[in-house]
Structure formats: C-alpha cells, structure tokens
Length: 73
Image (tube, rainbow, N blue to C red; front, side):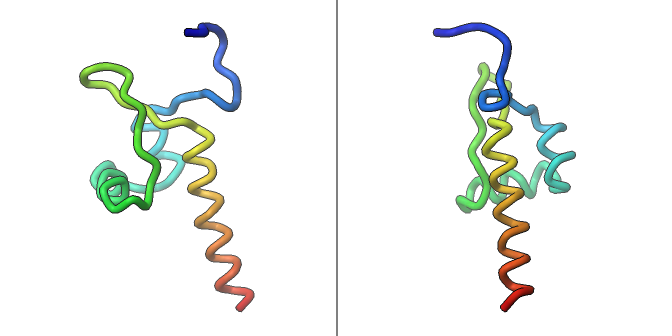
C-alpha cells in the first residue's frame, strides 16, 4: 500500500464536506446511494466512511450538464 500526500485524484471527503459541496442532507445522500444515483462511500474503518473527491465532483458536473442540456433543448 502506498502512503504519502494525497493528490487531486485520491483525496477523500468526509460527510460534512460532501454535504457542503452538494447541498444535500445526510439522509438524501444515503437515499441516492441506495438508488444508485450517488457514488458509494469508501469504508475507512468500522464507523468511518469517505467519498473520493473526484467522484463527488463528477456527480456535481453531471447534474450541471443535465441542466444545461435540458435548457438547450
């Protein structure tokens, strides 16, 4: 296993950071994970989870792209 300084591609976000970036509540994040509409978290331990930053960013960008495509139609 490699250890070192996190890079832009492997930074993990904890739930408060994910909530701040998406504007979603905790329950809505987990509801969307269950429905397959949000990236699943990475388990850090028995009671800790985090999300890869790039996956959360891609999810946000996809929402923006869908909005823009709908507006252009």
